[in-house]
Image (cartoon, rainbow, N blue to C red; front, side, top):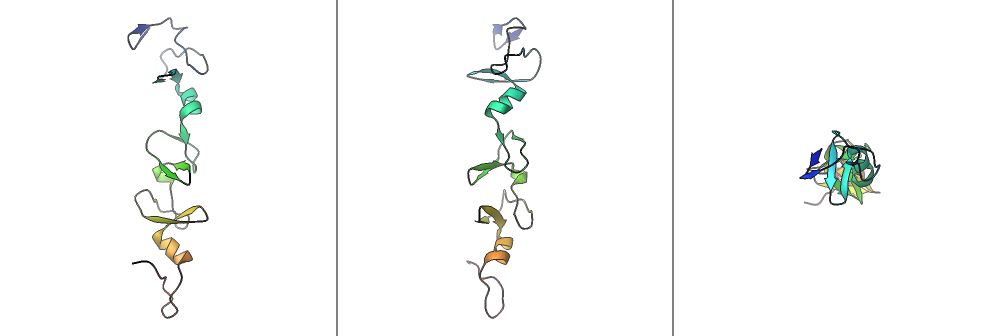
Length: 117
């Protein structure tokens, strides 16, 4: 078989980690070698803090943890926060509406949250 201009016996073209022949299975090539997809995910992939699945592209980092964009949600209303301004409290992210409703000081006259303008 041929890969990147080199020729291999099928039994010699193996995953760098598990040493099993890759054959025609999907592979991921790095400078350190060629990997079958399961081994690459075990060795190098990042996993979402929420759903625990592999993050294949993008992702959001919050408090040194990585999340899929669609898994990074407000702890109050569960709205996606990837494109939103948010605040955190006790290491939990909140959209501004929920944060203000739950934690902002309230006006003595109208009882509405006092927020920065």
